[in-house]
Amino acid sequence: GAREGKEILANEIGVVFKPQEKKTAELAREAAAKGFDPSVVGVTGSVEGGVFSHRAAHFEWLCDVGKDMGLSFDQLGKRRHGSEATLHFCDALYRIYGSEDLSTALGASFAIEHWANAGFWDQLIEGFELLNAKRPAGAKRYPMGFWRFHQALEAQHAAHTMDELEEAIEDGLISDEVRFRQAAHEMLDACSIFWEGLEASRQGRPYSVTTLKAR
Image (tube, rainbow, N blue to C red):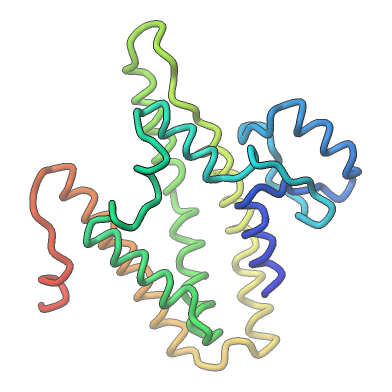
């Protein structure tokens, strides 16, 4: 629902989740003492009663990774840097995942949550661990907190995905099963194009979304 969406957005911009059994002041002391590091910030609870810190914002964690890889703020998260395949995926997220039609939006959400929990974060972590293993002796390792936080968070999301789907059906939120299934398929297709585009870029070969659509 709307509140679940706000929970995600508030956490993204830097509000730390507060476990039900923990007091706000206690949470604030612990999080501040640990520098709001993604390796130690919890993934359970609610933003209700949580504490805000700029250093708890997910994009700042990503910037930490980018900095150690020689990438500046201006080189991260900007649409102008996206390939055709990446922008196709971003636009599909906006159009399908962000649809005002609940049957469509819930279909996209259901598909993305299950895809993400099928090993996406595990593979990213494995890749960065391999990169760290290849770093010269004494060189600083790439920070892993951003990836591990989302790995744990996604596992929590996926554990409730089926329950949320059953509740949505019981509450009559999915009024059109065809649109639900169509949105799920379209979202996964767009996700596939994104990864195929990255692989083509890695291999140095052309990849055209326009050509794919014309087939």
